[in-house]
Amino acid sequence: MLPFLRRRMFTSLIPLVIVLFGVFLMARLTGDPTNLYLPVSATPEQRAEFAAANGLDQPVLQQMLDYLAGVVHLDFGESLKTGQDAAAMALKAFPATLQLAFMTLLLSILGSVILGCWAAYRPNSIADRASSLLSMTAASVPDFWFAITGIWIFAVVLGWLPTSGTGGVLSWVLPIATLMIRPLGVLTQVVRGAMVSALSAPYVKVARSKGAGDLRVVTHHALRNAAAPALVVAGDLAVGLINGAVVVEAIFGWPGIGKLMIDSILQRDFAVLQAAVLLTAVSIFILNIVIDAVLALLDPRVRDKATV
Image 1 (tube, rainbow, N blue to C red):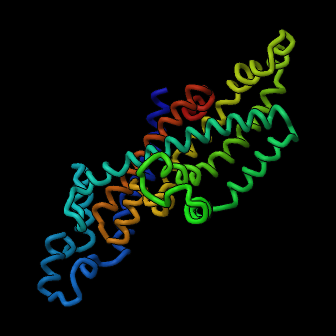
Image 2: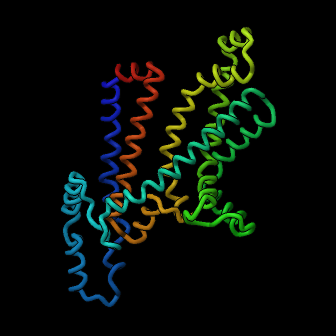
Image 3: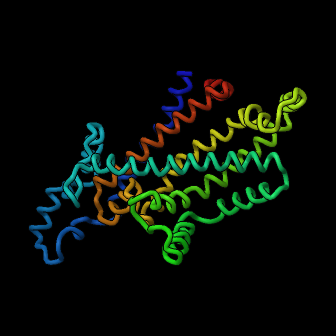
């Protein structure tokens, strides 16, 4: 198990290093923050003073070396906008994204298990056709369209839900519903396919011959063996939720890491953007390792194949 995890950590470090360099270079392409934070009437001396105070007067290579040295010491600098510690701002915003992603994934898993089991147990039924329609809709329609449509219908026209913020339980409904569409549709089809195979397996027929009821057959026999592929897909979707929350948070004004990234790009706040992106990348790196470890525990063939 340990050789497998070491190999997976090594291979996962490569994209993390690419992100480390990429975020620095892409941030500089957003423009010169001097033009944003100083008035048009600023003198050349004021511009030079601002650039020197924020290390922007150095060559790009030197700025990158300073940035990497700071990352090694977990020092990402200070925000140009607020003067606060960039890492502290990213860490403060990240729990809101994790809460949103966790609730979305939890509800998606519960809903997909119910719909997927029902569709597999009743092929060609209304539930089966509804799950197929949900899956196709989730795969073809972007999240931002659901978000804008949800705001128009439930906030503007009906006035049932708030358009943004985290003021109460109702403010969670639209962001979670928007993020749920895709994982719910994908997981429902995965659970359905795994359950169809499991329900036709010999051990299920044996259980039925011994007098096991329908509910016990589904929950204690078929679902347990169908959980592995669903778990793998759920882990991948969890990674996607953290990335996908950027657009949803920006639309609904959710104070998470995604909205912080968007604000940092608009404000050309390099230090905050670098801290937010790297924190997100590290969390995805850790999540992938955990998913691989759980999968290896459930299926020894995975780690045996990886160590060959």
